[in-house]
Length: 471
Ligand code: EPU
Image 1 (tube, rainbow, N blue to C red):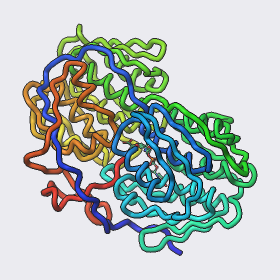
Image 2 (image 1 turned 30 degrees about the horizontal axis):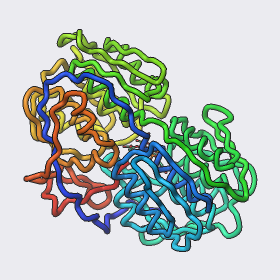
Image 3 (image 1 turned 45 degrees about the horizontal axis):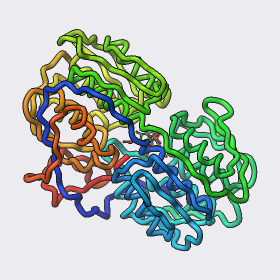
């Protein structure tokens, strides 16, 4: 059976109630902010909890839309997901007999595909929707599917769904990845914890969220070790047990707040922010000349003494960890609008992740996008308030950053994209002195919408717009 061809949207999720951020910019941010739990760790841990019938308890889970969607997707499978207090989730997946992850889940959130590995390994079969593409590129899942086949699964693709089976147990194997994939590594690792025998994943993603997932799996009794920086080895167990785990802090949120302090000329201290998780961004700060100090799980940025033009231009290039995260490319671009000279940006991971720069241009940024992977930014620019639209999560947060730095009022449409991944972002910026409110959108609009086979089309009214899956 042939694998997925370019994916055509067949389902449009009900539109989220349109909301806007109204931001009065030009106010330096000051104070301390605690970094929330990491979205891209918590989502995988909720999925990992299905590897056992015993109860798993997760704490420091961010209160965000993507977590709510993952919890709802699990409940629809028959998994018990309790949410006893803010930040705490308990998952018990005793008898799961509905092994079907529908298009509705995939259309809301690409990360639903992380359920392939654990459900297949524990229950021997699953039917799961192809998550298709989203606003940051094609984002295929061939590496996930190939990894499962290497572990002995048979997988057919029909009508937008993968039909995966592994009668008996999966078998340990050498999983070779042609490129580094975060969720590809995680899916293979989750599946291998219950496979028969020894699995080696190489090259394995080195993102800290992968290691946090390893820590949780080990408390569940799994035998998983990162034996070399790019190698993960697993000895499969017949069963795993319940566990409690605290989700690591969100390094992308941390990076977003660091840039917020810098571009508003403020001073902010991040708490629960291990510096080593954002070392590539800290290097950018050092290169451009913004004072930044790492403490024990704190990071302090002090841009109060900087004048326009003090910030130096630089070249940035995104790369798998420990390189500069693609999720921090857009915040870094906002920073570079304030640098005196020409900066160059290379986005190596995704092909559509520079498109949002068109919106940044509306705020006065001098940006040239040369091709899907390269852009130049001239600075320093006194950004000005404008009406802009959010196309995806990270670009959305970055438009908020630009609005905080800009003189005058900005109206940022599409606030729900940001709610998917940033916990209480308006409240947190408000506590640092920003003037930001989230309100119903009187005139809903979107920047671009992904049409059939991932093509993009100009702004449309919300009734016609589809919301591709986030993160
Ligand atoms: N790729 C393939 N085939 C696959 C999988 C990936 O060709 O089967 C390609 C992708 O198209 C991309 C590259 O491999 O060019 C790397 O993608 P990766 O698989 O690492 O991305 P991901 O696991 O789908 C996670 C994060 C993203 C983050 C990327 C890169 C989650 C839920 N998502 O995605 O986060 O940008 O890693 O670090 O963990 C976000 O949080 O906003 C977000 C998009």
